[in-house]
Length: 309
Image (cartoon, rainbow, N blue to C red):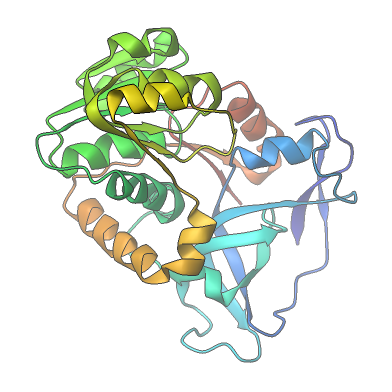
C-alpha cells in the first residue's frame, strides 16, 4: 500500500510517499481503508522536530473510511462498516490501524470530506459552544474562524440560534469566505477589542489572541479556549469583567464524558442532513501531502484540509 512518512525534520519538505506493508488489526483495533484523512495543526509540530519521534514517522489524526479487518476483542463493528475517528499514527496511508474505541459510525450518504470535517472539527465546535452555554439570541466571537474547527463553529453558532456571530481571522482576504458561512461581522486579530461586546468568545488561537478575546466580552461574558498553543490570561481582566474562562480538551472530554461526544455527533449529523451545516474542505490527493501541510502552515486554508487517497 502507499504511505506518506516524514524522513527529515524539514516541515513539508521532509515528507515522502512510498510503499509500506499493510497494517494488521491488533487486539482492540480496526483496520480502515481510508476515504479521507485530515491534516491538523498538531502535525506541524511533529514535522518541525518537536517531540523528536523516531524517523521515518507517519503522524496521526482524524479519518473516515471502511473497515477491512477487525481485531480480537472488538465488538459492534464488522468488515464493510463506514466509520470515522482518530488514529494515533500512520494516518497518511491507504490503510490505517485505529483503536476501535476511538471510532464511531458515519452515515453512508455523507461525502467523505464533509464527513471527516464533521467527525472531528464539528464535534470540537459544538463542544466549545456547549461548554460556553450559548443561549439563543446571544452574541459569539469565533477566532481562527476560517480553519477546520472555526468555520464550523460559525455555522453551528448560527444553527443554535446565536443572534450575532463575529468571525476573527488573521488575514483580511478570508472575509468573503466567512460572510458566506453566515458571519455577521468579520474582524482581524488586531481589532478584537472592537469586535465586542459579545456574550461568548470561542478561541482556537491561544496566546495574545485569547487575551484580546477577553477584552471583547460583556460583563459576565464567557471565554472557551480550545487551542493547544498555550498562553496566559490576565486574572485582573477576568475579575474586572466578572468573566468565566473554560478550557476544552477533547481528549479529556472523550475520557471523562464519552456520552457527550456521542450526543454531539448525533446532533451534528442532524444539522448536516437538514442543511444547516455546510463543511468546507480543501481536498488534495495523498501524493500532495506536502502541499496540504504547507497550506495549513501558511494559514492559507479555507475550511478543513483533507487528503483523499
